[in-house]
Length: 506
Image (cartoon, rainbow, N blue to C red; front, top):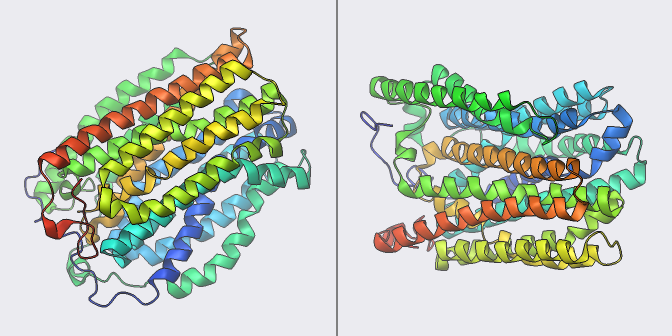
């Protein structure tokens, strides 16, 4: 996309108040809780799927929509929510998203049918999509330098731990409430959490944007661009989120041709709108950064592999090994603990090691995934051995994952101006959501296709794990390319994450 007429690029921390916001760590606590709850709902539903299937008599396609509808709506809302937040409405959108998430969670818990549950999940995902760009924008707005690295480190730990803890918490809830209605409490538990969180959000989330120039700029909203981008996102994701690998209609893949056409229209419209107004939704200042583009591609590939791991392993442990939801959730505990610890440490290490830290993390993730695949092939569905073996392999995967998510987010957004933090963060997350939808659907398709062909649970699971290994391998290649580019053209000294700037050298 052409950058003709694009506004002049500002320093990443331009507009940050001279005196840091005294409530910034309280705001971060609110943001981390929101991030935990919204990302938890991506994975907590995994262990509830057998209960939902029995309770609502849902088929494979309906179950896929219940899982993927959340991700689809999440991705559709991210960019417009980020743009509106950057225009000065972060606090209002934050509170509205919290209320919407609580109401839709209650609706999901009370759903009388699989159709109603799928609809509630779509609306719940839209509320999460409204919230998450404000979280990223607030971190970028309130923190600078080394503090920003630590804040994103905590945010990355929250994402990793919530995704890994989802199956365990879901298993605990279903065990306590019973298999018939326990799945309802998996969604309903969000309501009291949001009720406690709302007063703190109202009290501490800043009312105004700290950058006077952002408030003085015309608040143009590129509605046509937003609509076209939403349509492009939907048409890319639809064939993947509705794929189960069993009796799928091949006609669905024509949606990708529609997506390609819509993307051409997006590029043409955005180029003209930027030339006329300088306020295109796909901000050329953001897209003009090669580091941002590489970081976004890395995140997309990694989330495609990372998110699919838990669903595939959980299905194998419950459907093939015979584990209860709680037992299946406990297998993921080592991943959660290792990911949380390494994410916390990565916030301190990213200033020193930069992209090298992400490369090391991806190598560890690949090692853990290969070990998991070998364990599944060797042990099979022996319930006495498989749980411990997978848990140990996932310990390595979790340690690596914590070194990927937060450092990549910090490095990718390092040179993004604060006034564009929300839209940049949302563009990054759209890639993550699209990647997650593609990865989950590809892995599930391979898993169910293997089962339909008569392959055993271990063989089907191994095939699905090979898909996740390939996707994480793509992320590693992108990370190595980015590392080489950063070494060839290092950032100036003032731009490093050392407490004075925002970006690392490598």
